[in-house]
Amino acid sequence: MRSMKNRIVLTVLCFLLFFTGLGSTSLWDIDETSNARAAVEMLERGDYVVPTLNGSLRTDKPPLHYWFMMLAFKIFGKTEFAARFFVAVFGLLTVLMVNEVGTRVFGSTGGFISGLALAASFLFSVSSRAATTDAYLIFFTNLAVFAAFFSARRPALAVLSWISMGLAVLAKGPVGLVLPLGAIIIFAFLNRGPEFSFRRFCNPVGILIFLAISMPWYVLAAGRTGGDLVEGFFIKHNVARFLKPMESHRGPFYFYFLVLLPGFFPWATFLPQAFASTFRMRRSAGKHAGFGLLLIIWSLTVILFFSAARTKLPTYILPAFPALSLMMGALASSVETSFGQAERGFTLSWLISFLPAAFFPGILFVAFSLRVPDLEKYSAAAAPMIAASVMGLAFFLTGRPVRAFRWAAYGAVLGIAGIHLVAAPALESVRMAPIAGRAVARAASPDDALATLGYYRPGIVFYAGRNTVGISSADHLKKFIERPQGRFLIAGAVEFNRLPETLRSRFRIIEKGLDAADSNKVILVAERIESEKR
Image 1 (cartoon, rainbow, N blue to C red):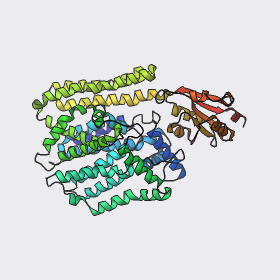
Image 2 (cartoon, rainbow, N blue to C red; image 1 turned 135 degrees about the vertical axis):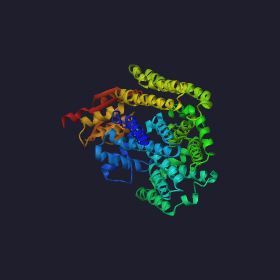
Image 3 (cartoon, one colour; image 1 turned 120 degrees about the vertical axis):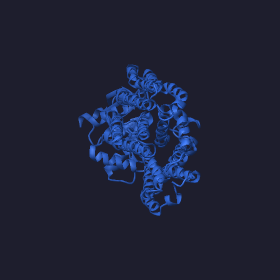
Image 4 (tube, rainbow, N blue to C red; image 1 turned 90 degrees about the horizontal axis):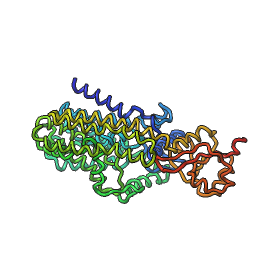
């Protein structure tokens, strides 16, 4: 009964965090809109193999998230909610999976705290609302690792593990195999307990199914594109990203240890105790004695692998969050029985947690102040983050450590919901890519062409519902508008005003605004005047 209650509470919280207001904000450039537009173009062509963006081959990602988006577009229409729907579904599934695994190993309290820690961690909530590949990779890689661990007693789970790795490869590429399989191999080498057999894990049926799932698309895509798609994906977006920084996404080796403070809030300050508690667990008796070692290996494999990579983005280490959350469940289970021994260290961790708690309203206030001073008041939407630390510390000092974790999570849920549902939608009026794209979509006929000058975002293509032509000079623009279809121009105001007057006079401005959320440019949407005479 208690386990069912925990599932219901976690499901309700996930619906609040992941599904509520899922379509209340426009898709964010660059990743969300690029993914969504690629899925639209594939759907319109009826092509499930070759992704394109703005009519050009897109080699960034394998197809799994495109397929889920295409299905959602068929069900819900080409909306923001549809683009993000299956991401939220997999976020929910990951939380429930962590709760089930934690309950099986640590009991109902540990399982519930594990699921709660994951659902209420800020960066995971972002990934469960964003139309990107992260939610799929997180779910399938963690399912692969956990299924492998339990496969000694249920051989069918070894097959499930290989199936999950196959789907992870379709979601993100080789990393979907390298990370979980690498962690499983390290675990098999270091684990001396009888609860895992690597030989039994290497199930021939599972390996064949893995190949049947993961390989056909790569073969078909290579054949359809002369190898360009697969080569661009493997060489540029995998090998090159690991060996050198791309798109200015660089950082020191310790980058992800800094990311964890706000990204895994409010739990990051307890990770030293959580690792120590989990390490002690690996030496304890019981049928799941090796599970603590698995959590340590899996989380460190992810974090250290991406720390070694030269290209760094905060979301890269998200596959480690379920393991870190399970460590929090182990910690909650242990502190419940040994409260006095942990009091001093935990009090310090709660006090340190005020730093990342204040980061959220603070960074929002600074960002709004610099770009959109009128929106400074919306930074208060993140204030419950501070309340999360206050409630956690208060309950802990009154001798209720598990309740401290629980109520800190509820406070974090309110703060995260405030950011997603209040602060983010407030930016809609200063996000010009979707505004400009919608302006074109309202005014254009199906055959009208759109050009961009000095300002291009994939969001323009998605919201305008048409591909764009990049303009690099006045002569290029003149040729564009002399075509019968050359009717609309989206441009930065500075670039537009540099055009000759004879060319500018052939347009009228139908939309104008400051893109304060992205480029900090004034953006114009212009329509060719002659088009009115047709």
